[in-house]
Amino acid sequence: MNVITLASRKGGAGKSTLTAHLAAAAYASGQRCLLIDADPQGSLSLWHSMRPGGEPQVRTAARGVDGILATAMLDGYDWVFIDTPPTMWVVVTEAIRAATLVVIPARPGLFDVAAVRDTVKTARERNKPYAVVINAAPAKRDDKESPVVAEARALLGELGIPVWAGQITQRTGFAISLAAGSSATEMGSETPAGSEIAALWSAVTRSVAAVNAANAAVGVPVAPARAA
Ligand SMILES: Nc1ncnc2c1ncn2[C@@H]1O[C@H](COP(=O)(O)OP(=O)(O)OP(=O)(O)O)[C@@H](O)[C@H]1O
Ligand SMILES: [Mg+2]
Image 1 (tube, rainbow, N blue to C red):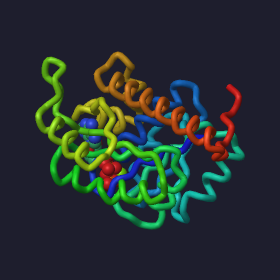
Image 2 (cartoon, rainbow, N blue to C red):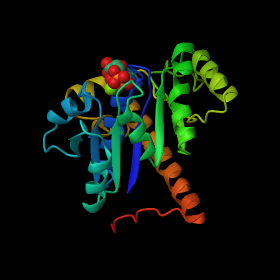
Image 3 (cartoon, protein in one colour):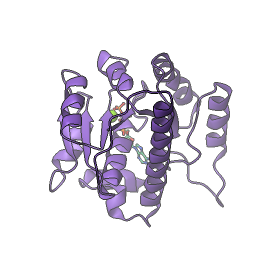
Image 4 (cartoon, rainbow, N blue to C red):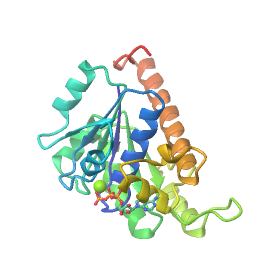
């Protein structure tokens, strides 16, 4: 079972938005997915309450994530996506400790980039693979990313922080689809929002495969994937 924890101390970075879109992409690709809403703000639960059919299912984590994850493992889930609050509360460190991969959304701006450091520190202390995803970026022009995104990459690079090569652009489609209980994937993978989420989901699956292979090579026990 793979656990993707979306974390950032910075409010409004895009944790809940990317959790919902990534989980919907995973679910649409036939994976057994579970959502954990570890944020009392309840954004993910609100989105889930508007979804016809109620999939992927959501659990709230008022008492932490470990018990939910243990049950999810027994239930045979392939992927668990955890949305966390913009704090460094115990539930966040617990979710980072349980992660296969920590995804840290950051808007491209000095303050936003600086704010990823706490989350990075926590991931590093727990030896957890992590990567920053630049979210709500200005649209590319002629396939060239905006100077503010290039600047953010440079700053993160100086700090030795891995950054996803792609970007999630500031698009009304991301917010509008969630407000309708839908997702970028369900709007169509040919839409600009849908194709960005498809690219991010593909990068996440590749990173997780690499993490699991590395763990297996050094003898770290990895939960077997459920047979398809
Ligand atoms: N790529 C995007 N394009 C357009 N709007 C976005 C994008 N990402 C996030 N938003 C909007 O920005 C706001 C904050 O996003 P979101 O709630 O996902 O952040 P968060 O990190 O979960 O915030 P919090 O720390 O408060 O939990 C929301 O209104 C959301 O719709
Ligand atoms: Mg949130």
